[in-house]
Amino acid sequence: MLTGKQRKNLYRIIIGAVLYAAVLISARFIHNGYVLPVLFFVPYFIVAYDVVFKAARNIINGQVFDENFLMTVASFAAFALGEYSEAVAVMLFYQVGEFFQGYAVGKSRKSISDMMDIVPEYVNLEENGVIVQKDPDDIPVGTEIIIKVGEKIPIDGIVSEGESFVDTAALTGESVPQSVSVGSEVFSGCLNGSGTLKVRTTKAFEDSTAAKILELVENAASKKAKIENFTTHFARIYTPVVTGCAVLLALIPSFITGDWGEWIKRACIFLVISCPCALVISVPLGFFGGIGAASRIGVLVKGSNFLEACSYIKTVVFDKTGTLTKGEFKVTDIIPNGVEAAELLELAALAEAYSNHPAAVSVRAAYGKDVATDRVAEACEAAGQGVSAVVDGKAVLVGNEKLMEENGITFNKADNIGTVMYVACEGVFMGTVVIADEIKDDAKAAISALKSEGVKKCVMLSGDRQSVADAVGRTLGIDEVYAHLMPADKVELVEEMLDQKGAKDKIAFVGDGVNDAPVLSIADIGIAMGTMGSDAAIEAADIVIMDDDLSKIAKTVKIAVKTVKIIRQNIILALGVKAVVLVLGTLGIANMWLAVVADVGVAVVAILNSMRTLNMHLL
Image (tube, rainbow, N blue to C red; front, side, top):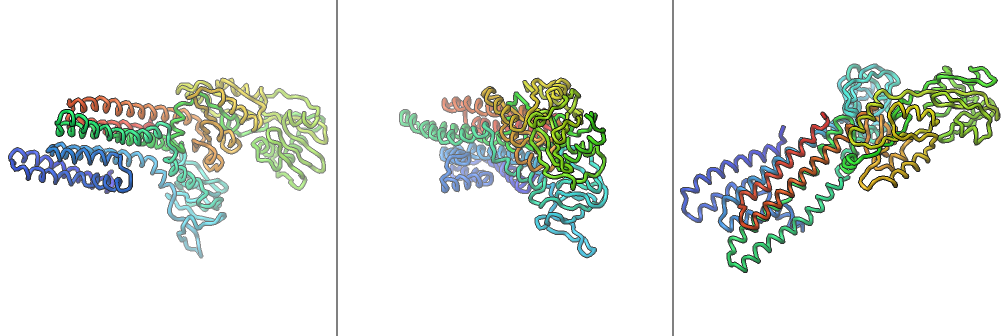
């Protein structure tokens, strides 16, 4: 589907081409030297007026050297030399190339602009029994809003009334709807499918998931890849250099031979050939298409620089809990020491009353009762070790070996597979609670897929015991496993890997995006997993996978590799063809028609090649 502007340009090109053909036929019968240039000027003006205007405007603004300048100078010189047909052809074919560029850019933008429609322009509120529509920006946190069937959720919140199936495809790329009911968390941008919902907002509109995603998408274009920066700088230097060369080509041989017409003509051909539009168009278009392809599978890439970096990933470092495993801990064993199992579990649940760690949540779930927080005081969480609290006036410790050792507690080490939590009260070891976490179903296949995409090494970091981490690593085919790590240890390890890597090699860190923000930030590429709605992930990561699908990491690498490959093809094609035709033009072998084909033809081929990136999500 063409836009109004694209349709207008197409009509202009067709009218100009028809008139040009008519003038070419009529030229055989016209012998008046004054009529012919006037007739050719009519189609020239129709197809070229905007290019000439842009060139003049840019010259006034001090931006002389661009493709508009090159096309204008070359066509004016052709008119001056009596090459009227070639002058019109230069502009006509240039506009054909520009039309293809506009169409390609429009189609590429649409692959991402679908995301721009994920936020509705209004919110439904009930006032005095009547539903009214309000601006989302005016809705304070805690407001109860109504989402009708078929409407998009405007603001993140918790369902307070109703049941429905919610389509999360706009955020995650997954077409399977999710069931939601009272107490379920819902995210802006998702589509309400089957029942009216009342939702109590938990964020302001500007802080909601969809709004943050849109902000990142809009800013992605400013983060250019190295290849993209190279072509930008190259064009800035290249254009004035070739313009200077064309001037020298026109002047020096003319002074020597006296044949000014021939050498000015060759200089014009040189200018047409040298136009760098194939590079400056196709490279950003290719990256934009790659980012769009990633967005279609529910992967948000924050800039073309990160997509390019993905193509050089040789090491992927994973956090274990919540990334390779489900993060759904369950108590699998209770080993009391001098107390009843129920008493041990109650003591652990009370001590963990204020912790949000998955292990703490699972202990409270196994306890199965409301935790009496009035029995708990001075609760404190030690990162990577466990918790301490005063329960019923007694000092209680719940955590790993480090916590016990640092507090001088004598305990019986357990070899159970899983996360082992030792419990001590008043300095006396009370027993052990063992919690197990399931490996994600697709984790092993995802690791294998990464290696098939050229990743040399997969590393796993864990705060768990070495035996547990090793067991998970063996199951998944992980190359290196590091355990007993605190958050600072993970940062240190990744920094060491960054120091030891090859010059072009990139290291990616994959985490849950909340606890792993420091490591996500320092890695070459930070990838946040399963983070729909997580502000920490969206802020810290370079790439956000909007659901829990590990296989999308390999798909993103594949898209990145193919995007960079296509862009390199365009660069080699553009520079190679132009170099050959520039030599031919200088030697007088190439005429203006060949110059037009070399410029516009290469640009069109490069654009069409770049458009292949739009469908890479289907790979």
